[in-house]
Length: 143
Image (cartoon, rainbow, N blue to C red; front, top):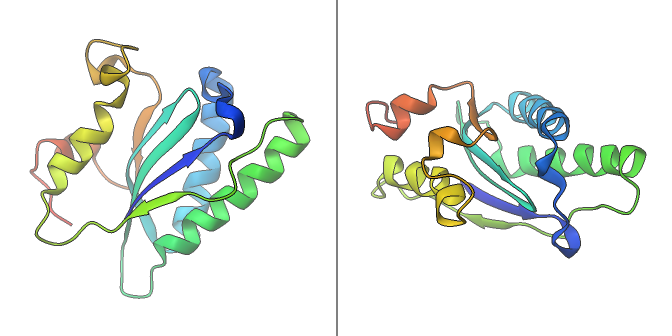
């Protein structure tokens, strides 16, 4: 499942490497606790794109995202008063007939489309958790 979560009032929260690292750790914890891998995440300055995939039938991608937003929202209240997530998030179910590699490449290309870098590999706030991002992008892994 692909998710997009936006920072309220489009505040540029994810320009600080330490904030991104903190949020990536919170994302890792939420994903692992609900049996998921993070196929890709891309922290843009004022929003986050990510793809979660369940490792087994009882995995819950939706609940992983909800937990991540709750934990990171609490962190924001403690460390960045006045900054918060928008209330909801956008989601898209990836169907089996969709090209997973193309979906991941589209997410990875966000910083290029926004003019932040010329190649997605130059952008410091892209990664994966529990899976090889480069193998997915080159379509050598299927989920």
